[in-house]
Length: 481
Image 1: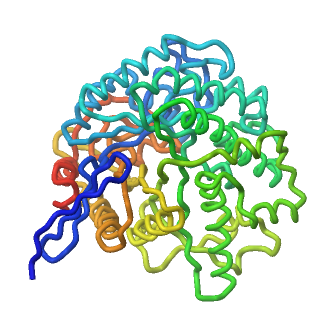
Image 2: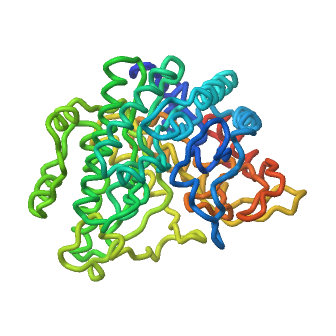
Image 3: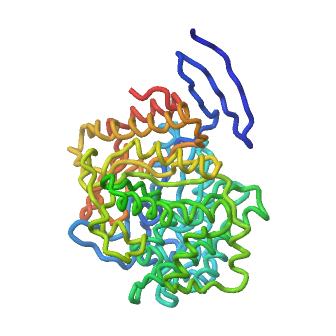
């Protein structure tokens, strides 16, 4: 029998509507967030304009399949055009990053008021279009001065500099920006690439140093998160790149390694983000390995005050781990580096990122029911090599298929599993440089006309997926066909 009724419940400031329709439960938030996520160095360009100082990205040279970072997609000069596309799509949130070296050229010196004014106007332009801003403070572009002087986040001096920077940005913009992140994909500092993302320039890249970087970035997060909760009405989340890793086989050792990787790389951070302390398995490992986290007086007390208003994460793909390729004694942080194995049941992208919408639903469930906080996927998408003929829209049915399946998985998590999801932000939905600087790897529903070594005219052109995504957003996820 078809039942028609509506129940409304108040969750914090959000209204949740439960509508039983056509025999299935549809749960929609009135103000569900649909939007776009980017970083500054992958979009802004203008590396030497507006008083900006150098970051570690500004000195990286181009290579065969990577651009330099000097122009990116020129959003420093073209952001209004990009905002108009987002507004036309129906987006109501934009997660962007403040470039630390644009607002403080040396990282720990005087403020660059011209850079701060740029973001002030930038934020107002979003708000004028009905797009709510979400600020991320750090997306791996360490000010070069701090990288050279202190080896990035290995140095406690950089923790203090970040604390000063983050709190200043909240003071400047917190009256009109209510959603904040400290670090993009903070568990990246707990993986082998953590040295590069932390601004580490010189050293032996030891396990102890990796754990010190992880602790220092968590402490830096705590300083800003605690300030926000004690002095503002803003909300803040800890964010990670959720690593969905399955056992390669049903061998008990594969199961164990997959579980340990999940605990150390995902949940060891989530425990601090939500409960203010490192889990016992983490502390036991640190003790047994003889790792000195270089914890100073008062730091654990600062962590103890941490909580998150919701949980944010990125998700693109899953993989598996095979114990046969992992030497005995390997730290869990390095399991994938040694034992990663492709999943034969999944399709893959040109970059061998395996497409797995079921993994997306699994993560939403695990995070929500373990921590009892609303979850918010703020990066997701498919990167594909695309070429434009200069006239006709790119026929990117593969992108529509990817997003349709992930949106359905998200809806299933809500409708069938009862997960509280705040919104969905895609990654680089207007083409940007990839994380490695490769313009061939495109995520957008809007094509940006440039290549790695030929800037062309940087013209923005919607792809076929643009109209489809516009329909999805305007129907609040109901029309996926």
